[in-house]
Length: 188
Image (cartoon, rainbow, N blue to C red; front, side, top):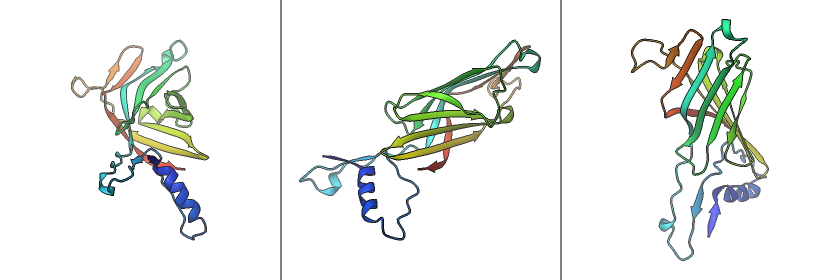
C-alpha cells in the first residue's frame, strides 16, 4: 500500500485546523513512502531527496548588436531538469524576439512535460542573471518555486574561460551543461 506524503499531511492539517499554530509554509508534494503491512517500520522505503534546484543544459542566447536589431532577432534556448532529478520531468525554454530579450519585466514561457504546470524564464538587464519560475497545481493548492542565479560572461581569448562569442553582428552566450540554479523561494 502506498501513501502520498502530501495526503497524510493534508489529513493531519484538517485535524489541526483549529490549532493556533497550524501554519505550514513549505510542503513537499513529490515524496511517497512505501508502507507494507506486517513489516517493521525500519523496512519502509526511505523517501528520496526532494528537488531543490533546476539544472540548465545546452544554454545558448544570441543577441544582435543595436545596429542590426531591425533585421535580426534575439533568441534563447535551453533545457531545464530538476536536481536531484525527477523522472519524466523536463522543460524546454526558447524564444525568438525582435524586442529586448533582457527585460526583467518579461517572462517567457517554456514547454513542460508535466500536466498542470507552467515554467517560465527571464533574463536580467544585459543578461546579468537568469530566473526560472515553476508554477503547478496540486489538489486545490497552487505552488510556485523561483530560482535565480547571476550570470558571469567572459569574452576573453582563453578558450577554457570564454563563454561569449563576439561576431560583427552580435554576441552568442553559452554555458556548459550542468548549470545549477538553486531555488530561492517556494510559495503555496
